[in-house]
Image (cartoon, rainbow, N blue to C red; front, side, top):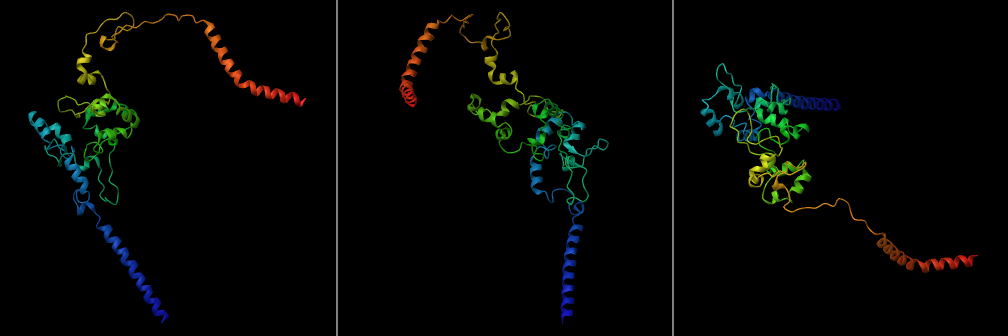
Length: 297
């Protein structure tokens, strides 16, 4: 009886273990992503939705691009960046817009068992965003090794989050905090209004709608303060000839070459008064101490 029980138990365990291995093996075999789903949309549905609504997904069908492209008689070189896998010989492309394989390449045949490679360097973004990349290279952000992905979502191509001010604050917390007390902030200005000014450059050559040097110059100030900055300059003798009258105070200032001599009598009187006050406070204590000292002798 014991032998039968042991035999039955052994077979049951063997069956369960074998069944579990079969399930795992079958699941792994069916994970051939290329066969089940010819593209990325089958599993990454949310990312696909974000991509379709973003600049990368809309790179070819975007109305602004289509208008500018048709105005230029549809130059083929534009399709190198506004489509994926463009072949000049056949004038055809694999996909419209910037598809997944532009940044996730080379594709793994056994994905998702292996992680899909991802290009995350700003240099890769600069292959198409040529002018913007050149501007960024001159910025403090580049010098501090911040990449495009620190501020931008790769799939939507927009900034991370809905609030640009909060995004700046994630690194520049003190500056954004104190900026809130300034006249600019009270007038409704944000960091990007001065540090990411809108450009008026014609479309093309891979530039963005905003300047990515993040620096502020006189042109930036002049967009709002043109009346103040457009004053006639006044030549001033000395080393300050470059200053403009609008930047100088409208009152005359005088400087004493040497201060007047101060009489020591005032200091003597003040010292005497302070000494008297201290003596009056300490004298009773000193008297008691002296009396006790003599009695001790």
